[in-house]
Length: 170
Image (cartoon, helix red, strand yellow):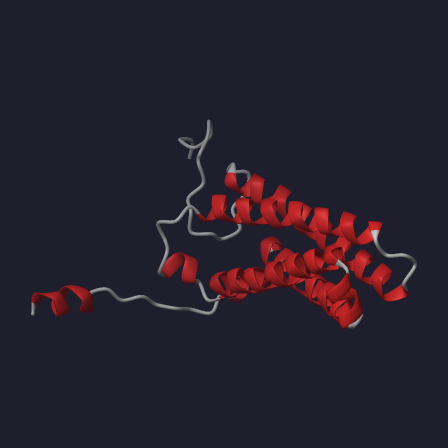
């Protein structure tokens, strides 16, 4: 019976964070979502011939769709403030940096693979161009995430900055 008393004491508040949408990380995440969606939609519209008979495009589709779904999940976590209310102990600056570094590298590889196998097909060229745009946005986001992680600026995440030499000055 004491188990119910212990579990009912934990409450979490979920709030819609509109400031995240207008912040630099929020805008970069929106850019990743829009460009990633266009990228995988173009590759998916090429038909089953390219996707079934060309393993390079299967890899590109895997990267595009998986990164889009996980970026959407992370965007929702930040948008509703779940990172601050339910997972406040997690090192979100490091998680964001690692997430962007991983997908930036994978999108770069996928864009290189897609560029190597376009064969002049217009849809494949367009998909490759959007893969490069998406890779660039992820790479820019890596730089901002690294700067935020190292305490250069704080975009409203729940993790405190590391301080530094000027931390004790008022």
